[in-house]
Length: 499
Image (cartoon, rainbow, N blue to C red):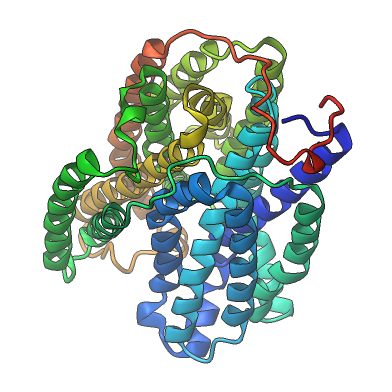
């Protein structure tokens, strides 16, 4: 299909706006959690405000991807925007935690549809050569949201009240919805019309069990439940293999796993989730404790990481769209990531703060060079009928990698710090402020403990990226074509001017 340049720009603006809203909701709410939970009288359960959203956004990815292939991504995208806006309205009016969690689940469903269908729509209306540039623009929403989300959430909560953290989505989302209705053409589905209900139910249940298992395994009181969830997940995965091999239109088509390019891209997506997304959550704690800084200063290191990711993401998208060649970027990116995290593991105690900032910026540059590029590559390797499914699977692998990586790193850090802290200090109640107010000698001991605990963590992540380098080397060489997708059967929705 060929759209006019003006129509493409309007469409990309709409997709970028709603993608930014979805990405921002992952970060903006975190700043307001304590205030929300305190107002609703549910401090002990406040984590479910985030967990409910994340579970819904992750578990529904394959289902939404398959729906997009069957009924067309336009319908799923528009319904997802409406669901996200309605849920945002309900979140702001929540009188209790149960209401808020239910609304957050609906918001998570809408966010998953928005993010996934944005990527699928780009694949349907652009040529493979054009996709890296547009994928990079839409993908920029995530790193920007990481930087501005906590600040925006804090300002809104302090000056307007926490309800506006959710309500601010509505006017922006309505503008994006209007732009999408103007610019988004009809995109009929082309997949088999039968939906794999048994596979969808089993897959969703197994994935929910898996995410809950890795989330709860670090909590001693919930560990028995986590083990039960792990068993349920294993049984569900085995049952899913049996069901999908016999399904007429499987939710995860086995043919996509027989394609070497797709498998390599899935492996690289896993590396990003387990390698970078997992560690970014713990870097501020490491900096506060090992470098004895304030929370504000500790944010400089993840900001440097994200800015490196943003710049390299946009630059790579532009370069690949010009040449069509993509294989070198994952190879260079994973090598930079492995090298940077290896340097982080070897940093001496007392190194200036600018050193980890520079090193983690290099890790961000490496990751950004293939973070969104792999979506364009994996879509070019898939059949048109599988675009939604393969895009969803790539997102899903990243999310699961992030969940597992975060749980593993959290467990290692928690155990290591508790086992090595000086006598008289309790890891459960130790705060950065308490450390900064302690005697200089004790501060140095705590800093050394965190340095020694995080060293093996960074080394392990460097090994993860080294595995990613091997996967990148196995990625088949190729060149993205200039062929536009097949035209739709409704010419009235298509502008014949070249993009």
